[in-house]
Image 1 (cartoon, rainbow, N blue to C red):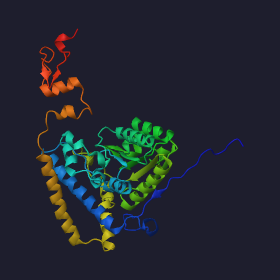
Image 2: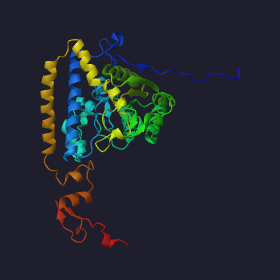
Image 3: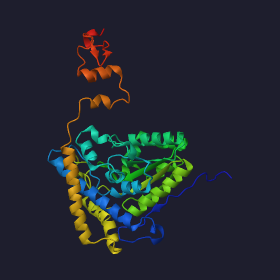
Image 4: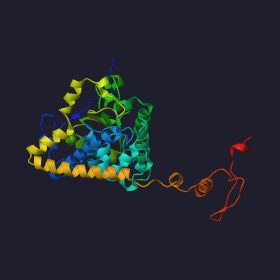
Length: 379
């Protein structure tokens, strides 16, 4: 036969609790125990309040540019809940909810946006990498982390997050190609919020779904309702099981929406239709989950009021810790750079100078100062 079909595929879309309150009992049964569901809801509310406070901090000059997470909380939270505690969580910069669920203190995120590097010193035992501002670089990091785990014979996997715009970056394609060809256990979680700052998704990708981009790499892929916490948990849990058992990567496209501006340095009103934003507000993951919990008698207005009071206190305390943190030590710059500091840098650290070290040999802690190159000695 002169014409034969060499390849065909289909991509599933997973939705369990839609914006109209319809719940798929078959897919959702036993997926999230009621006790956990309440805690997950509380986590999203806390993250949303932090967004509101962070916005005011930036506007009052107490913090630098900040990207709000509101509207996208279910993606990173559902993933953090579904993954093992020692799986790597490799964020971009809209994954606060998942990071907080893992145990990252709120003030660390605030410190990051205040320009304090201590906000990036996430405890190793939490298996979370710092926020990644360059678009796409974290996907390569996740691939490397998962590759290292596989090399060591560990069952640990990595899950990395990125936006729709990042799928146009070379880093994305390099990470996917590397992971797929070498069978590296990574979950690539694309948060498709339809806008890469002011560039609409239809310009990023002409295909009906971003999930299709994974097909070209021979990668298993699925699309999920990213504003549906149940759907995210199912998709990530299934992906983790597949990735952990096969050692192969998996792609998830979480369809969501950025309800706020790209960052506090942006004004989305200049390029987004107000009607579009209002439509997506009806699909808000927090509003959706709260209505479901009330229907199931798991939540009421009294509990909502108590939660609001508690969250306000928690966020206020985090802000205070961030703003009253002691000034960093001058030695931190040196001590945090290397596992074992080179001798010339140790001398700079201990002498608090570079000028004159070469001209005035002396003893520092019993170690002779070696002559260093200075501009006046250059040829």
